[in-house]
Image (cartoon, rainbow, N blue to C red; front, top):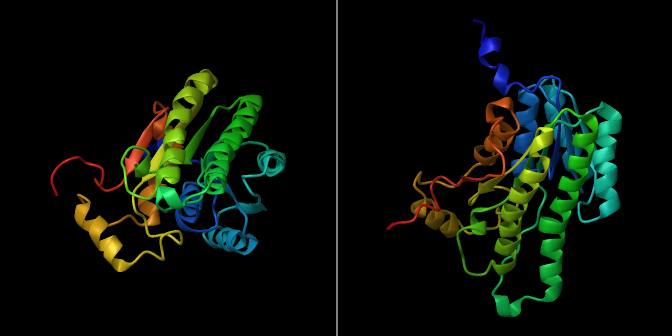
Length: 260
């Protein structure tokens, strides 16, 4: 048996993967991960220069990629993004809806505008992406896999993240219902739920915070982007063909209950 036969279930050769928030952090790592498995990758986000840099990295590896600027809070952008992928490459096999925003402050200092901003991107924006991706995948008739970025804060807790945690909890609920709607068409949907991860979103955290999180984590470190993105990419391969409606923790054991 050849190496390629061993790896067939993990291969994404000839498939097309969309990654939102693909210009940095977990999204960038996932885009590279999809490319290494042979997929054509479309990276999307609001910052063209970052997207172009990721495309350049993929092309330097010998892969094929394209960049599309889009704001997932805007419905027309979401529709144009998904339609643009299909129009350019003729298919959409995998989508990693990674774009999102964070929010942290005591509840009494927050405003309804803060709430609307976070939910408008983390819930409404992701819901719109899922909707358009399902429409496209059903029309193409090839099935597909959708993964969203949730968080350990959807099931765990921390002071000061009432809005953000609630937005991720909504995603965990959402995919269970969507999984039942689309499974008959061969479409799977899951979440990957990272803990503290070294990305541009967390680069302002004090070293003491990373140290405290590492101490509390079973593996005694925080995540690197690839620790999370590898799970998201795997969920889109045929190795995960019977996994749907799940929110999978990629937190190094941070959320294990017990004494520390």
